[in-house]
Image (tube, rainbow, N blue to C red; front, side, top):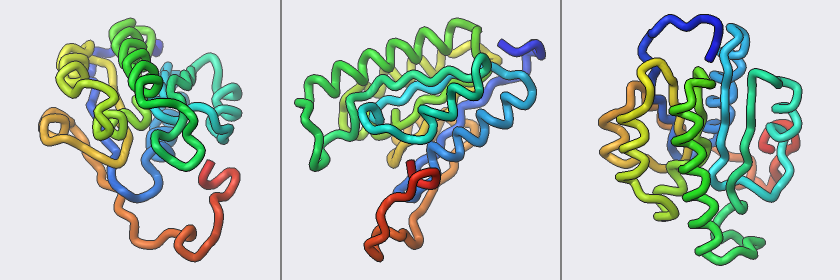
Length: 182
């Protein structure tokens, strides 16, 4: 954990919705924390086999930032060549890592990127996620992202922000942009 070991209550923060910016918001919080010498761990539950900006930039933020790409890639899309059992195993392993990192007291903030999507797809069990969140050390922040939220997670979260799509360039046949979308 950071040198600032005051026992302030760590928050459970959720960024969810069908709009873009959930991972980006969590990375913004990470960057802010690193400015105060916080230690951050980000575990990606779904993203996995594509190359995207946070893989490269995370190396520039060491030793304060650790990125763990635990997923097998996006589930059920055109180029998904993994069966559902491989996705389930990867997500369960990611959840085990989440429990370990949250409870280690080595991090001020642990980001569970796309965990809410893993919940929606039933790759992991919500009761297990809730147990981890309820048992987290007092001072550790946990940020959860994904397009979905359950009532139970909404209830225990301290901060919930919904990202709602208003307009998206893809609908005008503009492809995802390096450095903006990935």
